[in-house]
Image (cartoon, rainbow, N blue to C red; front, side, top):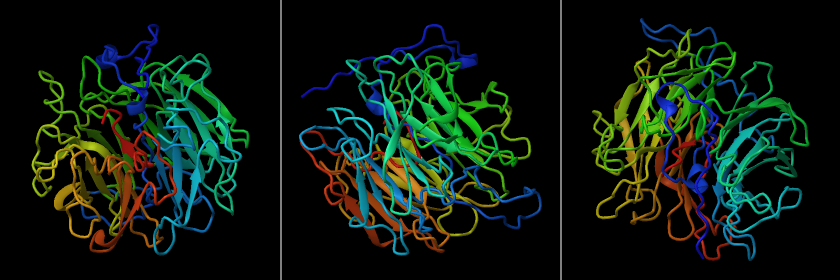
Length: 516
């Protein structure tokens, strides 16, 4: 069956500053918008002694996220892993969507220790409908401040009455028994068909009051929610943001060391800037373009260990995708803007890393889509955040679009190609085999699931067979260990399939471009 693909409407009254003034005329579906997930870095980093020339902040970087233990839904002290499977069936309802939560432990995650959440789950609002694609975006924050992390689920394809693709946002409450019960978070009024509300989610404490705040993106603008939230899903305050028009990416994190998260908006490609402009939002609510930066999605973490968050963005668009444009380096790139006492300023030139950077595995080729996904976290416990980058279009041997993940190291001098590693399904210790269209690293996430101070490498493989797959490699002082690594398929996680692919692993709580 062919699902409808309406164009996204745009607000003709909204104004966009500077080079983002032109609107994208291409038709993008909310299914792809659903991938624009951007949240703050999951790893909490401690202060380190820095060499001369690097000034340390007064306090260690905490990311301005207030969950007692971010992503810990049952309060056992271990982070848990939420995995979106928007193509999963709910009984006879095809492509209704699901989220699987794999609970962390000293031994990592396993398929048997899980909770599956759908719109048919008791206490979850809404009714499962065909093509809803529940679980297209996921994020975590302790919204009600009870000490347990809560789960946010974006469903940008959700219908409202007869209107397809309006979108919805659901919160599922954490507790000592895990995730139980939920509430709908009200969208802004006046959303139309194809708006794709809740395509992207970000969390952080913008006001500095200890309560998490949320940024939500979509095709008709963005919405900010100021915490705390009641158990009915009602925030202290809600505001609609249309200054930037269509908005597909949001990143939140503390880049100036004041204990408050800053917000960065990534509207996506425009006629004037196919690589995607980046805007910084001040705490007073003004927007400033960062004219030297680009990005479709991003995440914040402390790469150089100075106590300030650094903004990493992915720019997977290259000239093969838009002939005649001036996009990213061939094959895609990531950019890094380093935080400091003044935060991130418009005159900053980003550091650019790609597959032709010395030490980075591979070679930049058109269509690799390096930067499709990215995540920031410390994989070896050296107190410098590393960056895991997905190149979902990378060919592995003769397998086109098999995909590859690349781990780039953080250091006191910033991001470095030295010690970088590449992973594919042809890498020793990685289960499976690279096949055309697998899209290995279509999503990526660095998160410490074992409570040892080293983030695990987590990679989504949504194109694996008809199931989708999740791969997890344990962090270690020498770097991630592939031997004995874990792979979980959609069916092993208890999901159902009818006609559509399950797409297990399409959504993880980290940054992913909305177009790949």
